Amino acid sequence: TTQWIKAIPLADVPDEDVIAVQAGDHEIALYGVEGSVYATANLCTHGNARLCDGFLTGHEIECPLHQGRFDVRDGRALCSPLRDNLATYPVRIEDGMVFVAL
Ligand code: FES
Image (cartoon, rainbow, N blue to C red; front, side, top):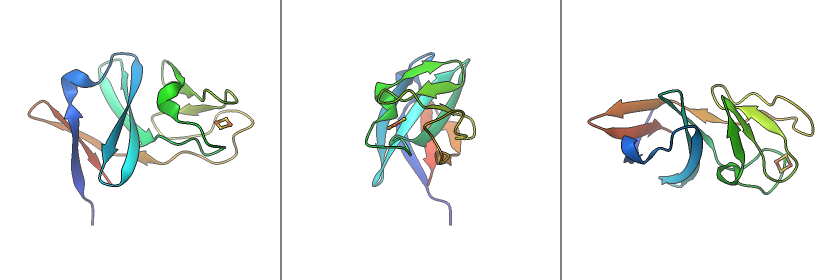
């Protein structure tokens, strides 16, 4: 069953940038892109790097360690050295709060 976890106020999601939040026992990266909010796992699928320390360009987050890039909308790995896609999570905005489905 889907569990919606209250993450942070919508106002705290940075525009065109990424922020890490704790949702239950998951560490999630939230991205503000052109007025929408996307959520993915925060840990890179390639190694021990946190995507909240990476660089967001449009819908692409670049890992700070080896510059692998993921599409934050569907978690797709876009280039080497990445092989595995990133987990993504549905996002809901309600009463000015961001909820993430785990
Ligand atoms: Fe992210 Fe290597 S740890 S690309």
